[in-house]
Image 1 (cartoon, rainbow, N blue to C red):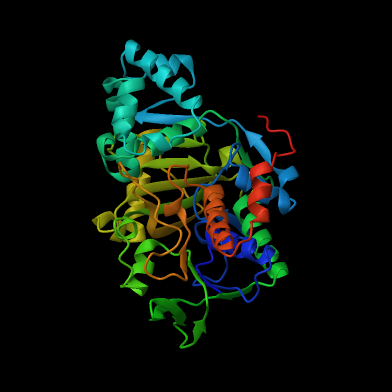
Image 2: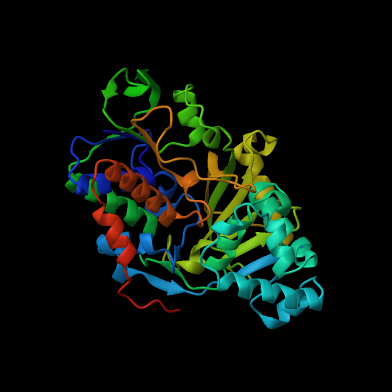
Length: 443
């Protein structure tokens, strides 16, 4: 069996199948280590994430794996500040005075509260998949709430109006309460690094073969079945079963004969993730700052040190500037210096002083997030045209919040479907379904 892509979805698929007794599993990954978007960078002897990551208290799959890897007891929880920018003024909507000052009518503020209460009480959002975000916000909030808050947010995320964005996606985001519920981290380390290293060791114990630094250049087919994956070093990997944990666009380039409509309709946004460290103090303190006016090059700024005060060197503040955009936009192709000038301008306009950085790193991700439009459907787990090809990845997690946990869950679902076809059950899936985090979640 060959698994194309060593991100969290591919790793979880391999682990579940190996635990079920499958042997001769090979993961092919183009980077030097496994982890995909949960990877990390090293700077001055310290490890930093490629971009912001936090542990959600309702992310059962992630908490299950953290516990399996002996990391659960090390997780600490913190309530963070999420700010919203409007005309260069910053508002913390969790604070009554800021909420009253926010540029939205008092009646719409009451309607916003009603919307949030409704979202908190819901758990199943699939019935909203044919509705738009605008319909949900207008029904349980108001058009005024939508214009003041949610139109800017869907533009920042997908560059789309609420009327074109999946209502089930937005509802799930609100239900997870990222801004008000405690978020987790692991002191003394970058927790995604610990997760990826632990999963890599788990796969080694499972007997899974891992080929890093290799790129798949083509998939050869015979009689509608994928027979081998050709690699950039001139070698090829034959297999009886294949799992693609690659972005859909990459898979379709490798396999032009794949004509499944749900796959060919998927589009991705790109991501600019710019990391830096400074010895300056950033006031007001925050973890997540949404730049909702649309006047900035960044969509959001994260103060990673506000969630994990042990990240980086002592006394250092680690900032993450994030821009969601399409990769055909000129900004995505500007030089690192040009983009950093833009982000420094954003910072100066928001905080009133120049950002002095100790180091900077810019990461470009050309295929970051699927665009969850109204009516989005998860593609089939198995290719209708190639019976031995299966799919896993963040484009199969709708309407759940896209996270490290949902990436892992996608791999579990794919492996479970493969096992079911062979008349087997997934032990890991059963364990996740019954799992209760044994440690106290408090902040």
